[in-house]
Image 1 (cartoon, rainbow, N blue to C red):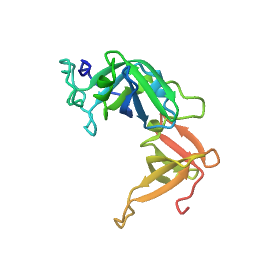
Image 2: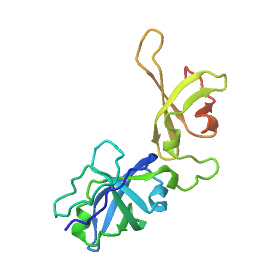
Image 3: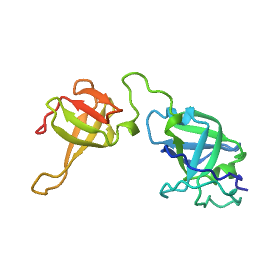
Image 4: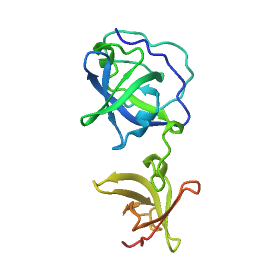
Length: 205
């Protein structure tokens, strides 16, 4: 039978950090695909909030307990998963949770999207930043020229690249996209409270 997971209000600062891909073993463990190459948030938070695949986040108040059957999970309210252990295993992450006691229960979670509160993330080291905190920041160069906003980040192996989108020009053309390596050689300052990144970069690069 499916584990009787309780519904719970989705935190206002909830961030999607991964999804459950499959069962692992026969004792209720399951595999997790993190959205980040450094999934510290998965390990630091003991309360995961689950939403079905590809459903929009809609915070709601806790009202009931999810029913149990053998078919895949089907629900509309966020579900609360109390994590007993999460760890690296080979090239993936595996975890176990209260109420998920066998393979059938773990399989019923397949595809669920995992959210945790941003406040539960471990403190980043000096000079390091979570990608989610960089999204939407305004990027300016040393001369004060506005280069656009951070729309995305890409990992190219040894370094991360900021994907910057600037507004269309005065003639109404397409938005301008810039890619700036997120390395000290080009990035002068990251001001999270001020929502600004200062870079050594020219608009015509």
